[in-house]
Amino acid sequence: MGKRYWIGIIAALLVIAVVIGVPAVLLSGNTVASTKSKPTIDTTKIHKVPDSYSKTPAKAGKLVKITYTSRTYDSNNTEVTKHAMVYLPYGYDKNKKYDIVYLMHGYGGSYDTFLGSSSNPRYLKSMLDNMIARVDIKPTIVVTPTLTWGNEGYYDTMDNFQKELVNDLMPTVESSYSTYAKSTTDKGFKASRSHRAMAGFSMGGCITWQTLRDNTRYFKYYLPMSCPLYYYDDSNGVDQTADMAKQIDNGVASSGYTKSQYFVFAATGSKDYVRHELINQVKHLKQYSGEFKSTDTDFSKGNLMLYVAKGHHHSFKQSYVYIYNGLIRFFK
Image 1 (cartoon, one colour):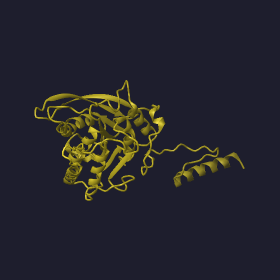
Image 2: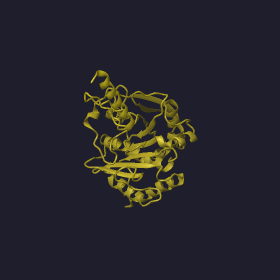
Image 3: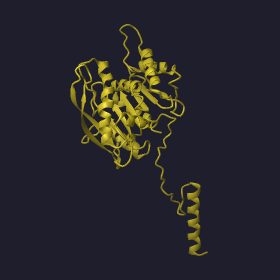
Image 4: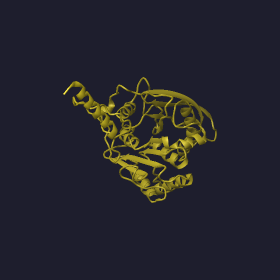
């Protein structure tokens, strides 16, 4: 048989492969590279962060420090200059739209606690680079702000951040970088909530619960780590987590969204000193079946998941596995 005959056979095989949707295989045995662009990691399981994710891949994103004006939103309502770190994924293109995560540090931290800086990036930056490069998640923008301390008490200060978040931080970031928000108005943020997540560790975890309670209209996904809505106060022997769960439920119920429209991945460590309080709060939330449905795998089975990492203490450096497993379940 002649050369033209075999060329015709190869062409026919390639056409058949395209039509039936299978990878085309050449006669030499080499497989044509896959064109998959969607995350393929199994979200029904908890995963360790691969050791190789500590190394910066060739296709790495960048960090940008931004400055914006806000207020303390306390009784004095003082104007303040704020900073936040913005992670932009590799190949960021202002003509494309990106999901966005706001990630708050714990007590005593700052905007560079998680990501570091452009000259001195930290582990989380490399982990995000690898997650995107390996298609664990889609290219995503991550923003790490700083809590501003005014003249109010500890919990009031955290509550006040909700005003800064929606009035100052979100408009600044999402007018500067391309997200799914067509505008930085109430309408624009509501319409794009399916592409926005709030996350935080320790104090930042408490702020994440506050965001769920107060701003469900702007966020679909929540990753509270190592903290319930408030810390446990045993001064009078009363566990406050039931009351805090009721606050969260009331806030979510009043938002008008159904339990298929918001998702919570809560996480802590088996040796974390606030683990009992977080576990108890989640237990109480499960009782509100109109707003929450528990799941042990992923969000196809429910909207409230709790992960307790064996041996983990109360340390933001042990939160990476929480962030990893939360993000792979977001923005589906």
